[in-house]
Every structure is written in C-alpha cells, then in structure tokens.
Amino acid sequence: MVLTASTIQLDVYHAVVFSAIELLVLAITVYLCYIGLRSKKVRYTGVYLSGEGEEVVSELTPSVGGLYWAFIRQYARRIYKLIFERVQTGSLSDWFYYISSWLGLLVLLSVILSLLYLFAR
Image 1: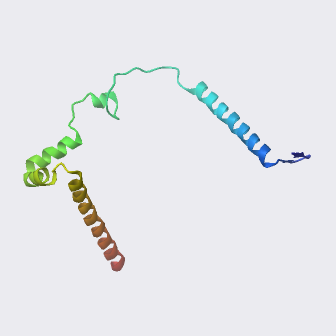
Image 2: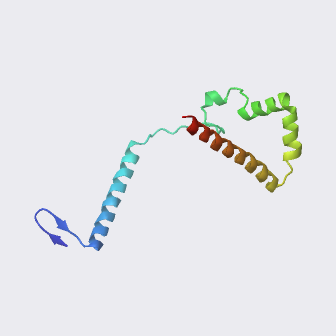
Image 3: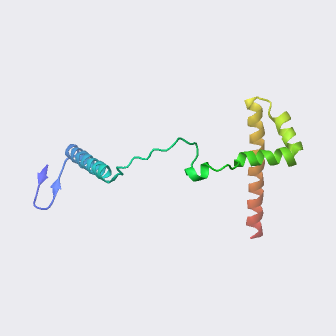
C-alpha cells in the first residue's frame, strides 16, 4: 500500500478487504434506515386467499374459471365432451402430445402470418 498526497494505491488483497468493509458498512446503514423508517403499527386481518382487498373478497363474485367452464358446458357441449372424453385420458404423454400439437399449430400460424406481413409490406 502506497500513500501519496492525492491517491492511495492498493494491492489486490487490500482492495478486496476495503471493498468488503465498505459494502458491510453500506449494508448496515441501509438496514438501520429500514429499521428506523418501517411502520410501527401492526395490522391484524383475517386470512384470505386473494390478491384483492377485503372489501372485494367479501362480495360474492364468480371466478373467471367458473365463468369459462359454465360457458363451455352450456354453449359448447360438443367441444367439452370431446375434451373431457377423448383428450383427458389420464396419461401425461397424451396431454403433452395434445398441448404440443396445438403449440406447433400456433407457431406455424404465427410464422405464416409474419411472412405474409413481411411480403405485403
């Protein structure tokens, strides 16, 4: 370590030690600021499973999934029957083949539409 009037030249070992000390001091300072600024009031509420506030959760509203399956069962019975009887076999590989075929179809469709867009431009 060489000390001159305007700069300090450190070897690698001392630079690492001083950097670690600086980071430790910074972490302690941030933690003390957090301790000093955090709220002192503790709020106790009942447990609920939602990302919404209590006023929204207390109202009776159907879930999005429930609305979707109600629509499928009522207006798309043939599709529901096909999905429930033929697709849902209980085998994970059948599910994977079904999902991957739809994903492949969507990727192929997006490539075709992208090429059409590029050629039409």
